[in-house]
Image 1 (cartoon, rainbow, N blue to C red):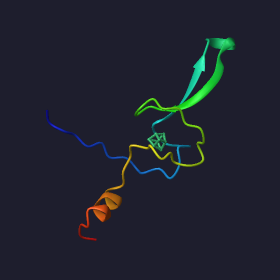
Image 2: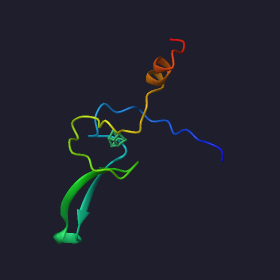
Image 3: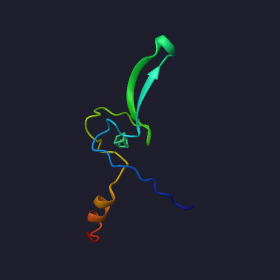
Length: 71
Ligand code: SF4
């Protein structure tokens, strides 16, 4: 199967990230906030003011440095 890359600005925290989503129960006036989760893997986000350890987004520069690539 072929692979694809989706390019976005790398967030410093979950707050404001394209993939950060609120979860609610109920509808209309009975709608209640439940939690926050990441739309990439469905994991719950405990603190939106930081980036999780399990975040799937990787900066190109970060990957290049880890592989010892050119700067
Ligand atoms: S874990 Fe990463 S991809 Fe998911 S909401 Fe947080 S910053 Fe965005």
